[in-house]
Image 1 (cartoon, helix red, strand yellow):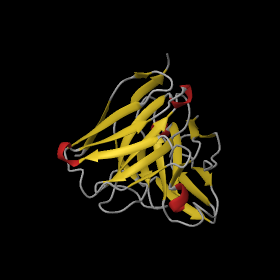
Image 2: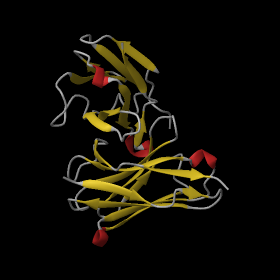
Image 3: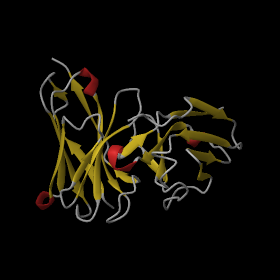
Image 4: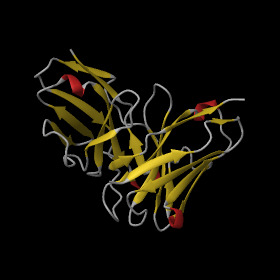
Length: 111
Length: 121
């Protein structure tokens, strides 16, 4: 069971938009619309930001959006704010042989 | 608002069994999927396995031979046992709940604060 592939780091200036990619295979991201994204600040538990590829839980800013194309899912954060600086993880259902798989995580730096 | 709290030993000896319990408050354990997820210090998240309130389970294939997850609905708790631990099992262990009743979405809406378990003699 291989982890989903994310860039180790991304950065952007306040007000800009950034996109974090999450690349899987046809056995996970490519086959199911069960991709979720999590934000994790240092020393804290992860927080659900996006589920089922593009749905936002209540209370999550609409600056966060998700999408998917083929085997790659993406998280876009628009209007970057200092508080968005955190680690971000994607997760996908991977079928009944592997079940759940996370990405390796991406550190977002707000310059 | 549902809350989850992990409990258990913070130090386990190599080759022994790691045992943790997650206590759910503010809501029933019924109708949901409950997962264990871990994070080695400074590293990424790894899904360990889930249990449905009815007792059905599924595990990460890489850990399947060593993992058992069980539920005690009368206590609103579910538990993790990981056998034959090594230093590689040192991690923060989180319990988490999927967001929708009766559905396995791998959308972990609710998390415990996490508990650090160190494997060392």
